[in-house]
Length: 261
Image: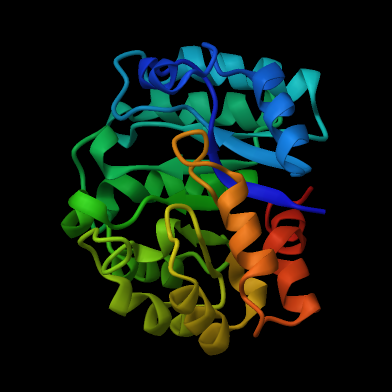
């Protein structure tokens, strides 16, 4: 079983430039999953800092989850600066609509991951909902979202699983960031996981697996921004040092466990 832990679903005009139908909804995703041989995908609203607080796209995700409950899964996405309004939206998406995790991106509200006064009410809500929290890290916003910042939060919330998005992104594929922090941070807290979206350097992924184990690495694609079959091919067919058990964990086993599928 193969599952993609980092993808997007909804309306993003840039997708029409590569010939995708809009909205890129559950029907479109299932067609794509079937074509590339992937069993399921965890999807978030696209874009950054949406004026509508991502509500229209989360509504589309909710419909996709209802229509394809074994194939499509939902990320809630909120701006912590919205306070109780954002927390209520998070509760609604998880409790009423079955969303499986929370995605946070510092560009959505112009904050940093070390602003604990702002973030901790959100993390406490996620803890009460018993869902993992995914943090975008690296690329051009990297000073606001480093693996070390995620690690600091993880130490204060040992009951919550946290996912370091894009493996820190620093030094990978030309993006700035903090990849050198990733392995030490993950060694410091067992409730830290990471995922491969946008990372196409197999030797870096192998180094992470060798250092912290395959049981805390998730397959992620960033699809449909990136072709979502590429990580599957890279991990499944081009990383020959991985054992069959390690490949099985990264390709899908960890996904089922972390997101309580």
